[in-house]
Length: 195
Image 1 (cartoon, rainbow, N blue to C red):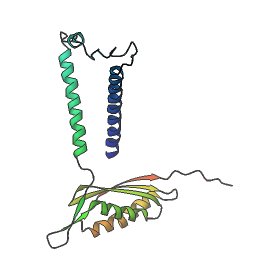
Image 2: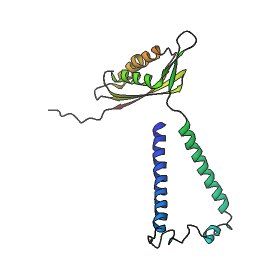
Image 3: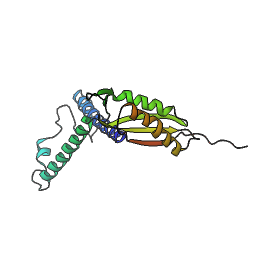
Image 4: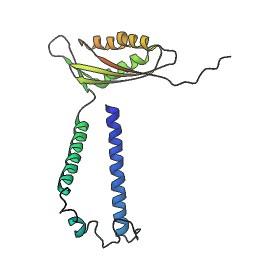
């Protein structure tokens, strides 16, 4: 989901920036005396973007106000969705470690991610690993991305990852469980020449 949200953010911000740049740049250029083409939205520095006739043009149509309200409603809902998606925390910042005294200790989420990532990259056949912790601090979940070397077997890499790296992290943090979602990808490589 974070990849999708990152892509949506880039597209929305890029389009918004482009519209603001073109709109503001054209108004500034015409205001400074640049003669716009005949098809442009305003014709000179004394011209307004929407004349009184343009503003009153669609008022008598029955579909105008429901359409305006529906479009504005959709825009507001999309803006609220985007704002909530930005404010919602995806990455777990801390993990509650059971110390046995009833108090517990807090472990930085990034530190646990780095340890898990290092353990995963040390496994045989793993070229690169990425780890992100999500969930609640007393019930974390791991999202692991592994890029496997061409000779590595996915089943074996997954088994070793769950037994060694994830298992050790779970035991070290004193967690009852540490569910992990693992995504595997193979390293792109050239075909080997057979002679």
